[in-house]
Length: 335
Image (cartoon, rainbow, N blue to C red; front, top):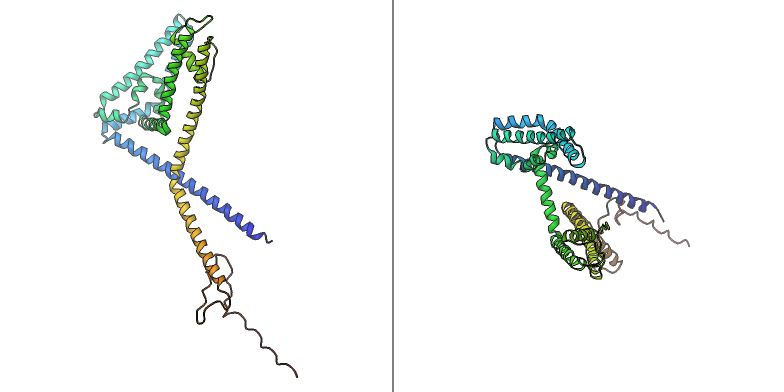
């Protein structure tokens, strides 16, 4: 058997896969560019018409964005030192004073900008996350990318989070699991409150134990000792296993569906192209079968023979009956 057709078929399939990957990459880049354009358009819409004062504030903010980010990191370091170390005397006071001085500088800079700007409502609409940057100065690092762009990205993240919660009823599942968690904590407290050797004596302890059990962590600092408490523990363990499975499957399904929707147009075009090719192949096969069925002598007298099907692309042209060489005449018999 000639291996050439198989080689050509494999080459054609590889080229088709390469073309499909190229189309997918092109569509991905076009989608990223369209998303960037939408973000820029949304920022411009929220920003509204500009004026010289606002442009001046923008240029000043662009200059001080790195120093403000450094102040945010310094604030976080001072807070960690104050909360986690047992420094006393002058060292503790220095870190505590630095913490409040940095916070005051951030607050003062933000307040001066809002005093200087003319349209404060529209200015705040384009910078909705700025209160977070003032209350927690560590997030001043967002100013490196721009507060307006960070606001748009934050809005997209919130929208995606809400979409995941609404995907396939995940919010209802989480709500039911939370209800079972609080109910299980209350039930285990009823069983364990007066049990001998129990270490769960308050609802706070019971709720902590329920959270640890549902999340399948199991620290072991709190545990039920009564039969009823252990029965509640078994139910919460099963709820936790099911909850983790549902959460993982739902999030994965959301991203798969998002990817499928993004490539829906490409898949639709590919299916239409494939359908057209299959229709062409079917029509060619029908004409070939019709030509093969009408053999010599099967046609009616005076009927014209069916035309041969069009040759496939790349096939050598077949010789027509008119162009075939004539047979040599038979020689007369010799006496």
